[in-house]
Length: 269
Image 1 (cartoon, rainbow, N blue to C red):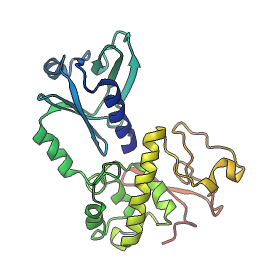
Image 2: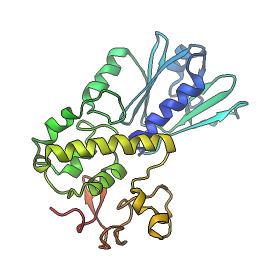
Image 3: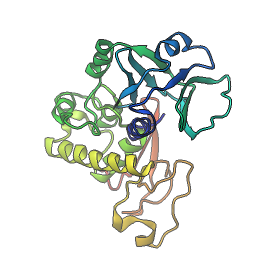
Image 4: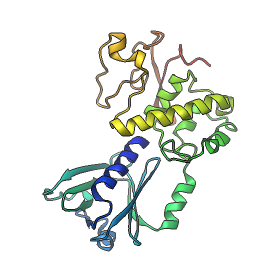
C-alpha cells in the first residue's frame, strides 16, 4: 500500500497537470460512470491529501475521494492518450495530459461535509501544514499498545506505513514493542519532526531514503541497496542482514498483520 508521501505527490501531480482547466472525465470500467458524467467538462479547482486519502475537487459538484488500497494504481501520460482499457476506473483528460486510475479500494464522489468527516477520523499528517502532533501524543501517551502498532494506526497518525514506521523507530533507537505510554514526549516530538523531514524528501524524490549522510553506500563503501522499492534504508526488508550501525542481525516479526523490522542492538527496550 502506498505511504503518505506518494499520495501527496499524486496530489501535486494532479495540481500541475489538471487544476484550473475543464477536464474530460470518464469511467471506461463503468463503476464510476454516473459520477463521471456529472464531472465531465467541469474545472478541477482543488486537490487535497490526508494520509493515504486523495481528494480531487470539481467546482461546486463535490470531491472525488480516492484510496488506492493494496492494489490501486494511478498513472499519468501526455496526449494523445491511448484508448483506455476496461480496467480504468477513472480517466481524467485535457489537451496535454491524462491520468488513469485502476483498482482502487475507493473511488467515489462525495460532498464537502463527507470529506470533512474523513479528515475528522484521521490522525495528524506530517505532510499537512498545521497538523498538530499533540493530537497523536494524546493517544500514544495513554496507550498500552506497542508504539509500532500505534504508528500504523491511521487514527493516531495518518500517512505512516510500514517503511516509515520501521525506519523512524530505528533512527531514534526506540524498541518497536515498547508501549505507547512508555514513549517520552521528547522522543515523540523528535520522531514527528523526523517524519516531517523524511516524508517531504519522499514527496520530492518519489522514493523513501532514510539513511543519514554518514551511512550512505558512498560514505560507508558498501554496495547500494537492491530492492524493488528502491531507497536506502536501515532495517526495512533487511531481515537477517547486518545492521549498518552495530553490525548485529536485523530481525523481522509479524505485528498487526504486517512485517516488522528492527535491530535489537540499536533499539533496546
